[in-house]
Length: 239
Image (cartoon, rainbow, N blue to C red):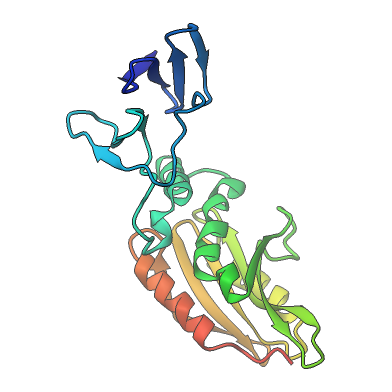
């Protein structure tokens, strides 16, 4: 089954979409079908888009007449929920909450990267799955020593578990992992996500202290971002 989307303005390209939402194009002149946009019909930076409310897909290129199923110029994201990949991952685990851990981990990296951006000197690394001695994600912060050398320090270690996992057991694992941080100060932030619930922590003096309360990643996205912003504004000493 396919969807008949539109013809190009010159009538030479017929655009369809399959059930997955992939567009494909039939060249009327050559009778050739391709998933690549035909040469000369590619979107250009100066193109404008028209909202056609008579159709279920959002926008049509005013120059070529071809449609797009995803807004090419979305407004600036306010939270990680404005990321279509995060949105799709959360929709999946909402429908299948018994999903395995690796499925629940899919949106977590994007959530962390939204809060801890590369432009601010952070890097989010996903660790190997199934190793309880290591965190699931490590957020690094790059600093430059007075001598000019760049070095990455642990800023936050994160654990991600599927629904119904034990908070106590996961906190014990996180405490052990934070105790093994490479920071000379042995101070670092932590995070636990179990299902849609997330809790931030501060590890200092071998004590694991909660920072803020438990939040829902979907229904309290702005609060999650705000607490992440607080952690960035209050760095812990690394030496």
